[in-house]
Length: 389
Ligand code: SAH
Image (tube, rainbow, N blue to C red):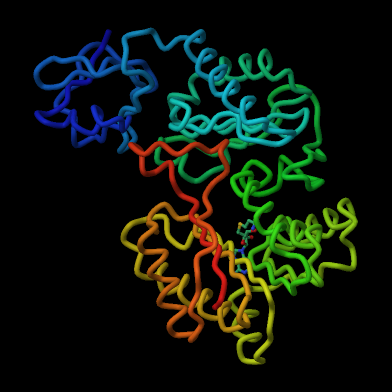
């Protein structure tokens, strides 16, 4: 078996459970091996640290799949997907859920989401790209979908030397499905909507918002298909406004309102949430609940300061609109905005707004998106549910 030999001392992260080997940590690569192939991982003292898939074009040159010595063949991949599925079934995941979440299921580079009788997958690395026929066969056997869609249209594929790819790879579908997620009926276009179709990671948090929504005037900013707005309406909010910049997302949200008997309860506003928050702040508008779920403001460590200013601005404006007893559900989906920083931003915003808050609940990604403490990158969705005192 070809091997990747690490420089002295570079095995520590692997031993701690983090499965990536960066280009700069490699002393040499032995044997005749192509990018995408399987390699043994050895340290400078020739100790074995498992097996992974190689891609010299990527800064993350090896991703480890096992700490053992088993062959990374189709049976191995099938076993990993079976284990991932067994865990989701134990959670009682319904119609729409994440079956495989990359490193969190010891399958780096592979995402599989089920949406009713259709399945969507993403191949994020060359190692997975090279094994797509296995992935498709395994999905067919274990999930028996009507159709399988590939949504590898993500820019990070370029870091692996890959082009983006998207399309129906098995069965027939126009991409349209209707599913139930967190008790909400949702119509999705799995070929055109953002991500693999929906933000499944928020599904547990809709329930928390719904539980507090009764009788409140709710503002849902960055609302995409209206997940939080719908949850609030179904939870008995007195009225809801959903702000979202993407026209297709707003159309979908309107359709979802029909499917959930929420027409007339939700006002849809296709606009820039920054502008709306500024405007409502100036007009001294009041709400009893605000949800802030913006896209990631930073994908790199270098931009954390800019991102911090962005989060501060929206949280400050939202807090100013809330009377005592008002609730803010605020999220960050940037892995680089750690808990301590996110809390500090909120405290800072609360101080400037003269709105002291208490923490009702800490929120995170749904349990079908497991977090591995040894792999900080697997924890990215952070939410604080707070109430103005
Ligand atoms: N809350 C949503 C997910 C939000 S994802 C849910 O539960 O499904 C972030 C959303 O913000 C995306 O739909 C994106 O189109 C939208 N967005 C990005 N920039 C925006 C802006 N400046 N104003 C309003 N919406 C924006």
